Image (cartoon, rainbow, N blue to C red):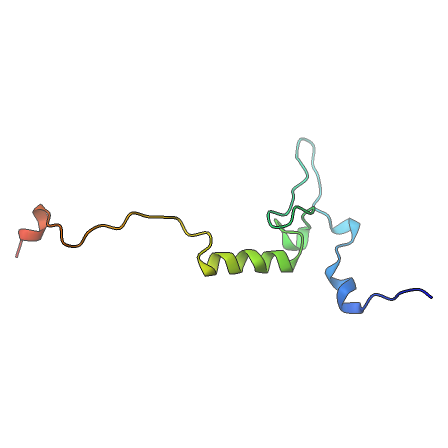
Length: 82
């Protein structure tokens, strides 16, 4: 008996024709999340799932750029002006 794939699962799988096209001198782009080949519809990712994972990381602060906090107790030359 042949195992059937649910329709929703078929929709998530990229067809070979959807793979990001290669031009002369370009490399195959890989998904930065999972390393699979990127597809045109979700570029630079391989799927909407990986794009959503990346968005969650941005919104959650995982990709935050560290910054030095300034002390607010320090006074500078501009602080004396009324």
